[in-house]
Amino acid sequence: MTAPAQPPGALGELRVLKKLSPDSPGALKLARQYGAALVCVRHRTDARGDTRYTTVELLVDQAPVRARVDRTVGIRVGVNERTLQAMVRAAGARWDPQARLWRLPRRGVGILKLADRIVEK
Image (cartoon, rainbow, N blue to C red; front, side, top):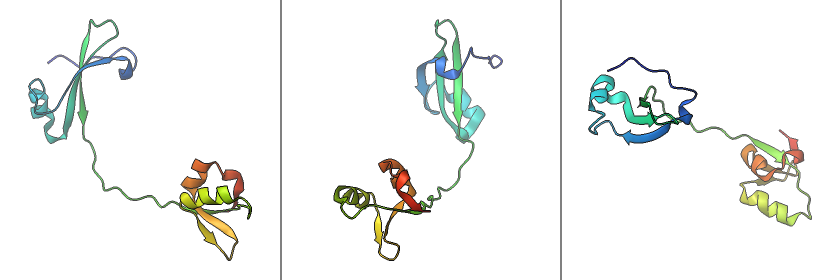
């Protein structure tokens, strides 16, 4: 095995020739070297095609996924804006009768481009 080479520019500029799973012929030596952390092996070439690079993808961390808490914000929608009311309702909004506002997850406000209607954060 030769010393690690420095590819020209970014790896994204290199063309992928082959992608091998750890149990494929051609990846077994690297699988022995990196063990269960090896995800895949890629053979790449530079733009001219005269140099081949071998890259490995390794699993370096594992953690449980925690659901993000999506804050709700109050938005003002006019009584006569029936179409907009239907849209915010479809996006998961709930009517808050005490505040006379629609409560919508912040994510939905961004998707519907209603940031200018936020009145209570």
